[in-house]
Length: 220
Image (cartoon, rainbow, N blue to C red; front, side, top):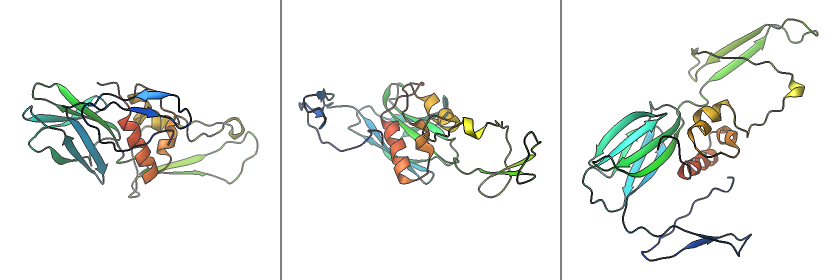
């Protein structure tokens, strides 16, 4: 989606690599040099469980993993095992930042993961007191918000009334949801930010994870 993709490449020490575009074969983009040391995080989040795997040779002793969201540390643990899981069931929606640190708190690797535990659970119902109105007539609206178990939800909300002929809905542009949970947390601009929240399917989840792997946020 929007130019993002993923592939696996096995590189060896001393390899010098570059990327080329089939549309512009004369242009070459030099790839970073192969690192013979260092650690990285491989992550997979699904069904309220986040699985992580520390890749590379660890010679630094006990490592620490920090899970942060919206500038707040949600969990930290010493890694007795380099491959394990975290429960993310009660984590807030939005960008989760995982930091792998040495015992002296030096950051060794970082990975962003998007958490979607509650998006789409709300059910809005808007009804009017009559099917049609004359020009200038008063309109009475009844608005109900329930969760996916059909229980009423509490909160503070605002309503904006616009002329339908004066407003065009663009589901791919940045909106309230994408801004609160995504674009406000990232340094770079996100093209078609609203698209990532258009559906909760494998295509959108994978595209959002690719965005996380190529992004940086404001807390690091």
